[in-house]
Image (cartoon, rainbow, N blue to C red; front, top):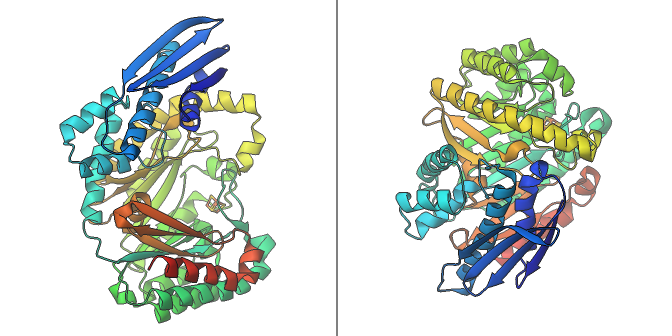
Length: 481
Ligand code: SF4
């Protein structure tokens, strides 16, 4: 265990995140002193009153207070990373980067005019990021830049959330309600949602919409009539022909029917997701998915027959009981289906998940450690497999509590990259979100300022307090016009 003492600074939270990375590899108790003095950061690791490792690094000067603070934090973290690396001998693939948007750093440095060679050196020497992750980060940042450079003045994207799922997956921490338990609320939820969507369309009239994304939960847990009602409403209030990308994250194959796929096609949905997570039956059973591998293939086949020509498939690495060979099997099966997008997620044990509840603290450490080793191999394999299918990485993000501190990566065939995914990650245009638990992000001054307008999470509260949610939005929109 590490007992942290910060002297002359308040970077405790960020440093604790670095300590958290090394926790599974640390045995015994230590004191860690992190000291800030003018232009100098120092970390000392102390065991029974003796300094066993020490690192000092100079802090770059800066022309503004904000930049000076950033530089200070960076080097305080760097020195702590270095002493913990010396203690454990464990290099982290993402070095000391703990944030969820690694490519944002690339874009930030590029805005400051830093060239690629200097950037690579910084990522290596200061951030201690491994070479292959630096390559990935830079490749993804370039792909994102292609998309972001086409953003227009005042353009927005829209998110619409459907918080129902047929059953709850063991690893889930999203706002998702079991349809079985809440089926009486679906119609009233749609009433409230359509009201909020109408308000958004009216309030944002005249602004170009680049992408519209219906996510969840599982949007296709709505029945055919409900889905048609929602899509009809969207068609009536927005000018769909001007929207560049329209996605429905259909999600779980057991909720997708031929008729729903027909409705989506008829209503001009251009991109759908059919998410298997794994193509191994034993895993689907273990994670609480009540459908078969054959059903996934069948649904995919029907979608193709109906002309859906931009399909994403999500998989998760590190699912309970899966080995590298199981992931290899999943990827081989996906190769046969030949989707335009594959999104590779790394299993994260989220605070609100059932899995977290089931693992006691000590079990969780051992579990994390064992999984981390496998996941590295699974990630390599999935990258090779996606590239062999002609899919290139175009967006990525990381989560807290990810096993082995890894990443989630979206791969796409050239020209099929999901615009919404990039916009939400890079926060370069406003995303107006409707539905229970949805968070609107208003982006100003080229991303320098972001304001959030949150809806309540609870389904019942959202339905009964819909006028208040709309009022929150109205005030938010007015404030920053
Ligand atoms: S399908 Fe997604 S949102 Fe629904 S329970 Fe599973 S992980 Fe959660």
